[in-house]
Amino acid sequence: MSTRSVSRRPLLAAALLLPLAACATPRTTHTLSPRGDRLVRLIQNTGKDNMMAPEALALMGITNEGRDIPVRQLSGENDSGRYVVSLVNIRKIHEFVFHRRQGDVLILHLSDTKFARLQSVRYPRTGKPSIITDRAFAESDFQQQLAFWMDRIPGR
Image: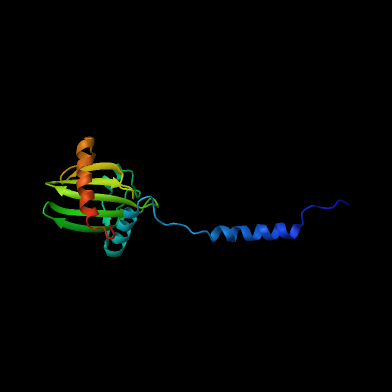
């Protein structure tokens, strides 16, 4: 018989305790943007549950098999109109949809929690939604909508 250089018991104990040690490590729950996390909490705490029509969001890549999209919404107003931000979690990640009406057209912007604009859609009251191809216009409107909400996020 040959002798083993490593005893089995300490090896077995280490194998059993390793998963427990991995669970004990602290995990952060926020993304790269603490302000984005604060806006998520603000919407979760004070917003209202709602359903959004799927047409415009489908152009942004958010689908629910043709059904309405469940969101949590927060709205506010100032001199230039009414602003709405929707928190969407259909793809298992938090995403924002910022929207406001300009005349008979609804302008929507999809953003991640780092406030990077991912897609913009124009949705006329009596028509079909379309992707906004004018990047300068889309970015300008997105920044206006974002500035409105930045003033309302607590803990600046």
